[in-house]
Image (tube, rainbow, N blue to C red; front, side, top):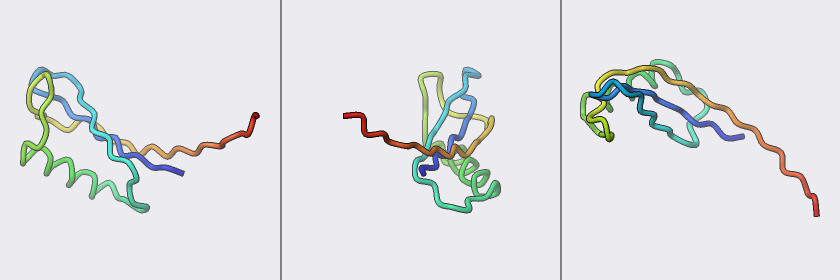
Length: 72
């Protein structure tokens, strides 16, 4: 089972930009995600083709399970 955190921001052009983090720890909280997104914005850590990230838009924790089949 793999967990990925998708954090979505709006850049200077108003376009949505996603930052994805793989292998997120179990039990991550909404407060921790909000704080991480605040730090990303405050420290201007990322930029995009539409300019700097300016506003938090949304976030989601994606939990993927896969099953491998032997078909040979």
